[in-house]
Amino acid sequence: MVIMKIMRKSLGQRAGRSAISILALAFSIALLLVISHIHEAVRSYARQVSSGADLIVGAPSQPVHLVLYSLFRIGPPPPVIPWDIYEDIAGLEDIEWAAPVATNESHRGYTVTGSTARYMETLQLKALNFIGASGSGTAFRNHRSAFIGASLAADYQPGETLTIANGFSPSLKDEYQTPFIIQGVLMETGTSLDNNILIPIEGLRKTRKAHGIKNDYLNFILIKLRHRHSLFKVQQELKSKFNIPLEVVIPSFELEKLGHYQRMLNNVFMAMSFIIGLLSLMMMYFNLSAGFAERKQEVELLRMVGARPWQLAGLTLAEPMLQILVALCSGVVIYKVSTLFLGSWIPVVSSIALPLEQLLWLLSLFLLGFLVACLPAWRMYGFSRRT
Amino acid sequence: MINVQAVSIHDLEQSIGDSEVLRISELVINAGETVCIQGGNGSGKTTLLRTLMGLVRGNSGDVMVMGNDMRKIGTSSLERLRADSIGFVFQHYRLVPYLSAFDNILLPCYFSQKRRYEAERRSGTAAKDAIRLIRKLSLRDPSRLSKNAAQYSAGQQQRFAIARALIGKPEMVLADEPASAMDCRGKKAVYQLLQEECRASGATLICTTHDENGIDGFDRYVNMDTLNLARERENRWSS
Image (cartoon, rainbow over all chains, first blue to last red; front, side, top):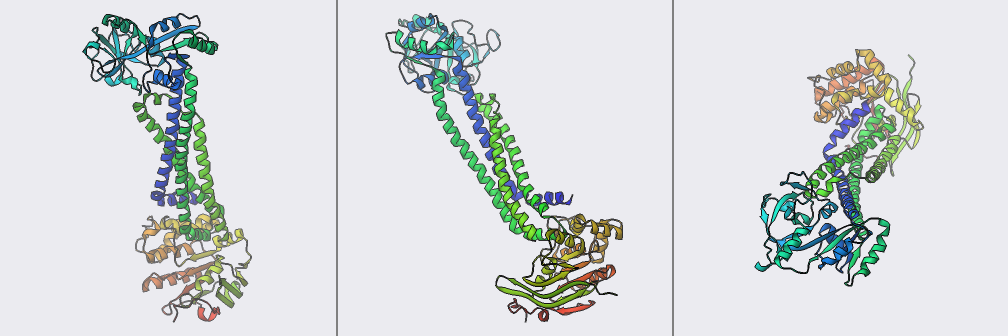
């Protein structure tokens, strides 16, 4: 059909100019998707991690700080609490397991975390084992095994030994004598855990004792309850049970509070990329309007040979709709490609599929584009009828 | 032979804004007649042709084109009248620039069954008829018609526009300065082809030109300066 041919050729003629608005729209769509992807990924990662532990116990501090440090290693470590507290808690009936975590030692400036396999499971850490050939398990082979974070992998060989020291600016006398043997490398997480060395807490306690430290201590405890409905009861119980003050927080509650700010930030970003999308639609519209003046004579000529007003209006409508469709498709492609790169940069980001509600954003941009395209088409229809 | 009126204009008045551009008390052109309308720039030739095409509607008076009242005709009847029965050459915007020369010539056949049928009847296929017309316009290499129209010279574009006007045997051909971009030889060929084709098919031909001399062969010559009585018409350029 000749109208199709006219459309194809006329699009081809304007390809250069429309390419810019198509590109702008495609990028804003990709940006929209990437932003909501990151948002979703961070949320689901936080949800997964926080669902691993029902309660977190630490020295009195800001609840949010305690959660952020214990689960994501954001912020400074909380002050230490005595080891006895852990033993008391672990013995309680309501508690399925408790994971003590000590982060008070260091090795050449890298934080040394002493904990159990439970902690690693909760944080969803995975490791490559080099010793023991036990696959990718995170179980410590013995009390003197160590896992190193991904960032340290280049500097250390598996099987090498390392010594640790008390505190972060240790003098010679703070250096523990017993070395640890590197068992494997933790997979990259994108958090500061990548700069950590993980050792079993039992091994750490033995080493401390050997060094002459009498009063054992730790930084925080992750707790999983047998039944989640006893959450508040246990929280209150733990707060009043000991004669030293303790902070007992519910991580999912604290993250929910943070989630509010995260959503706000996310909405600002989304609005920004949506506005960029709107601007490129406007650019498309101005292109069309500028073209409209140029096309008056063309329309006159086509009308003279017998083209119908609806055919010409259809031409005017089809052109921007096609551009918007191309922009949508290439936006999605750009997004897909960029998440591949994003995944290698922030590993937690690659693991989710985008929820369907993102389609609503795309759909609303498409509909807006349709409205924007309808205006010149309507004008064209009117002009053609008068010609 | 009965003289059927192809065009009849009575007491036509046409203004653009405040200025009156056309005032024609009477103009009658019979079917099959070839008429050359001569006049200086701004004498109202183009407006007259556009009135006959239905692109502008007069403010008052009667304009009949092949039995249709052009001031009252409905959109779809006007569409059919133009597509089936009128071949036209615009002075400035001759071709759709992004279509090939060939497609430009064939445009009326795409939109009008009647004109396609006539072109096929004449030469077998519409494409062959286009080539026949192009040959007559002293174009050296008629096989090279696949380039976009905008890539041809003004003179060549005018030739394609004329071929488009003539294809499919329209009953009336309206040509606005059809040879303005051509040399002497080209001009002769253009007017000759227009007259020949129209006479052969019995079509009415109305040409406008500002050339005073060298144009012959028309049945009638009308001087726009005496035909158009509008006082305010734009006659800055005529001497």
